[in-house]
Length: 64
Image (cartoon, rainbow, N blue to C red; front, side, top):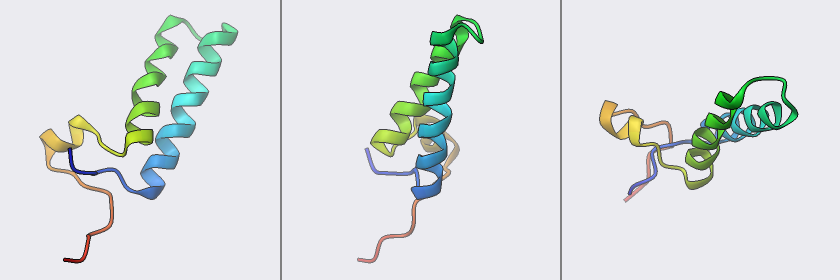
């Protein structure tokens, strides 16, 4: 698993994931809010399987 999620993308994923989970836990939105676990985890590990399938990479290029 090579990192394919960049810095700003990671931050947005983590914030969105936490927000969805918090709203689901408070009952603001339904149980579907727990889907926020997906962006939270992909933001924390820096790898997104959908990006791999689509050939997208938001992390900066590494120097060899």
